Image (cartoon, rainbow, N blue to C red; front, side, top):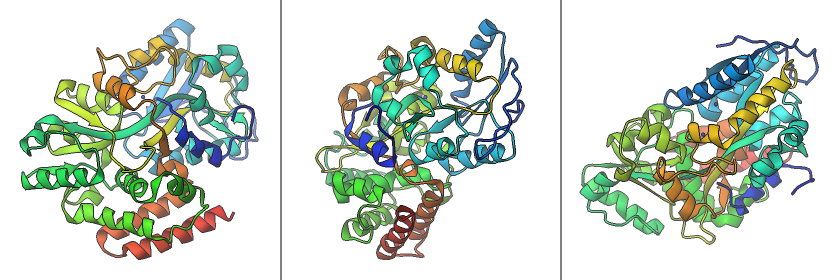
Length: 431
């Protein structure tokens, strides 16, 4: 795909590529159309991110180190917990208001694309050349931050989602082996419930956390090729495979395989329940070893990770790319790029314990993050399907989340949910 226009179809093509986590002070004068005056240069930078309290400290430490070496002052602001449901809107509001950060963290796919299309994000091609990012960063991941041929972002991580579990709770339920088929996963869930243990810890607030279950079920029922066509709007969602996935989704709630009141649970709270022993497992990415296990001062040996079984070939998991963009109206783009280059060194990536870094030489260290290293060894070459809140634009993703909520609340049926999804995707794909 090098040298070609990078579209949504191109991003989804990463499914077949193996790839393996950063208040308002400085004003940059950005505008939604990409026009407007560039802010005056200064030694002050602002970086906007969605890191939570467990990881923001290590990022700030590296930023402080850069500031001390370069005479800059960088403010790091974060909006943790809300994920793609709120963070992009907050960022967009700032840019529409004529302000905004010099640097922002963002997902690839249809979440990052609007900022590139509106020319709010600077073309980073000169910095790719200056700092040699094309050779130091995973090539496939770079494509995930390239839009219509423009390198509007630089990726620092390529995430993979799997089942992270509490070994003690599985043993308590008499589970001796992790499931290798979907039927075995359901059987494990039943054993856990019989032992008084909630199987899977997912929160429905904002929609994106519990979405991880539905997209997995769709991969199981539809298979890789159809799943990808559905995400591209190339096939109808009003079909038996989608109805079956929604039916299974409701089944997980009805059989108490999800926490009681899951729809009202905040991902920031429930995401580490498997570490606390409140649930047996969660659908998370490599970041959870640092953010949940190590942050709680737990021994990674007491936990494990496995790829959710789909009964499909190839066996895929959910995945996505994250990176940084620089404000096109920043008066300090050179300093911002220098800060990003500093954060993208193997030394900084290791110091921040990024378990899925795109930077060569920053692979997971078994001595510090053994589970992330185990995942990389076992599943690092596995293809992935695009996580669905990146596959859809914000508006359509929000509508999708509403359907999930209505289904679990019993106000719609799996058949009606599939029909409604087809209406949403058809209207979007037809634009």
